[in-house]
Length: 434
Image (cartoon, rainbow, N blue to C red; front, side, top):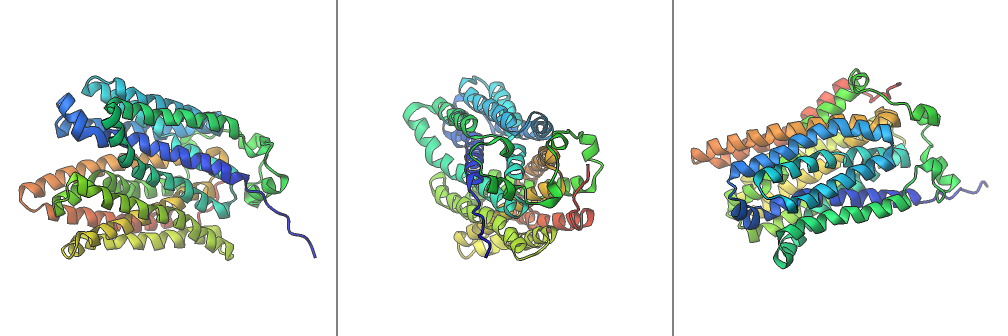
């Protein structure tokens, strides 16, 4: 009987680095929102429009960065590209402490937005390089759960740092954590082909997908954006991200306001429900990645496994339209429904990110990820501004709950619409031959 070759696990060490980078990414971007009311508004005399302008600068620069940073990472490589992105965003995060005006914060947020946009293209490219297709969605779900961990850690630590040492140190300390990550990244990371700690059996396991067997020279060739935009698969990912990422932005920016306006929850009351929502999203992120991998291990074709999993998660978002009706019985019912929808988003996200490496060669993964991320960020700006106008309008009419009801209908339908669009554009997610 042939002895089964034991596959190593070093690829999970690499994934741990990506997970922590993603956690830092979300930690850095949330600091300003946690300091806004108690420190920044009184000091800089901000009104809501001033703060909105600072937020929009971040989103727009994030969108612009998504388009360009992915191409840069594909060009200079994963190790240097990830390090460059994280270095700049860590310094930009620290730079907030030096801002002495609204304009100064807008500059710092703009640089932070451009540089933070490198995280997901670099992370998805790392997963494509280090994991076979059947493990990529799970690996993506695990590192993507860092967004949830960052969202939970931030409100537990940032206010305390500000109380103990001042608001400037909240930016400095969180930014410095990223610089510490760089030390481990340079010590640990190499490509699979060059890594001395990677066993032969694990290397062969990572490269077990026959349709990805290419020479190093071909893998290093670069592909232009214009070439990528000629493929239906690019547009499938572009539309999928453009329709669903804005829903996540809506949860991030409007959930506290919804709980306050609908149920009178104060700043103290909000900590537990928001932590619960992001705690649930961690299960969605990892479970969503596991499900499509489970289907693949059962013998399903990769495209079928991804699509069935994504359809299930799209259906799990729909109950959010009942959030307000259920909230009449108890606010916790509404919180749980929002938590289910947010969890389903992260499960969807783990799979839609993985479709890029399913459909494109590794040399184009970061670029395509950036193109889709740009669509999601622009959509986030549009939905955020639309939500503001809509909620202001119905608030002036004394019926803000109607505005939230409309927004939840949009959130509940976005994923099914995205799934249908992706199915039409790339029915079998055929791999692009570039």
